[in-house]
Image (tube, rainbow, N blue to C red; front, side, top):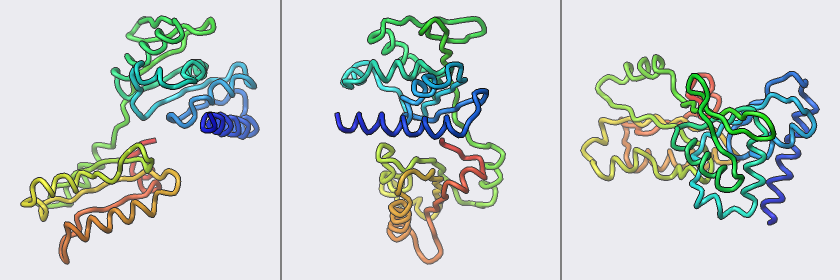
Length: 233
């Protein structure tokens, strides 16, 4: 209960700041599960706010979602957005099932393959949009490695992402023969105070798998990610 109250308070504070610093004609684009209540808080003050909500994380099944005491409040808040986006259709399917199960709302397929849920007398559009890297830049970076092979991944520095279990750690323990032939480039998006912990992870990885002439892991901060286009949120 205390955590739920804190979650609502944070979303409410965020809404207050957004409302003070925005114009009613602005497009509000909300990122991920941290601000699921924000669409509702914005529309209370800006009735015709144009709101998009995108979830970078998987949407849970209805069996998991039902464990939340505030499941209906969260779903209604999400449906205050004009558009709700997910990474894959599987997450959309789970969202539709959950909305039907707990709110009794049906989804519909519109023209040109569009999907929507009718809520509050309006269609809330639901879409699938993949987060991708800049292929040309990745190819250019790979061309500089010579005979080396690079494994690239992007992580949030949140507890849910389990950054401790990296590609490099798994691969080198299972196939030690490739240690000197692989470079792992891991792009990390900053969240909270996890930067120091991630730096420690890379230092320990270099000590365990590297040597004087071999640096197996390299870390990029959020600023590098944004400049290079490897954006995860």
